[in-house]
Image (tube, rainbow, N blue to C red; front, side, top):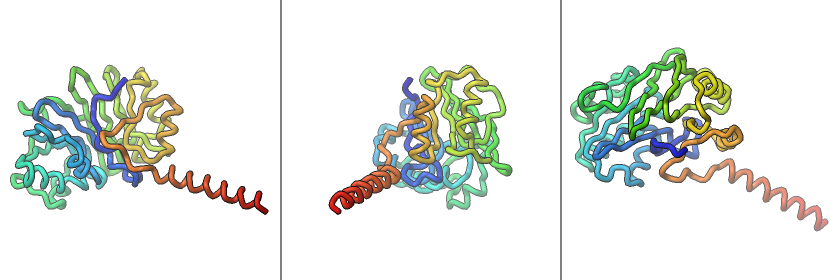
Length: 253
């Protein structure tokens, strides 16, 4: 099964080799962008994402840095270069003070749009736990004749999520209080009778996480731009080359 949502980045805050996790979909001349962390604005400029776009709807699932860092850059790009006033969805996880601290001002830099308004009917918002002090928005997306579940960053999904066509799930390499680990994801798959081919893991921390997902037969979201070459792979090659030299030296002796 191929993924319906497009991704600019799939990395977590801990993954320095890839752009922060950010997905989007386009409908006609409308772009709906989910989160805007580090590297997202540059990825948008390098791609053809904005081609033909006249309306932008920005969704912020929560206000952690790796989900909002590039928001000022992207809004400046829309306003100054593209002459488009972006819309910011006024979701249950938005912290108005946090947005203001980024130097963004309602009316000048963006327009607030209420979810489920006449202008925006493609996404429903579901509250899920993230940290002890912060909830985040999971998304129910209706697009391209598909019903899609997008978990955002969460420590658990405390309700049934049966009946979706595709599932995009946050997955941490090792369990912690902020994210679901692979065991939790597998538990959710079993509990909701989800087929593995329907699941796409995102918010990837490392090359090891990619390897683990592959071993488990789970999809990992693909990005529209190739990620930077993994430093882990480079280190492995350096270690391998070092061992070859050491063996060579022994032989020469």
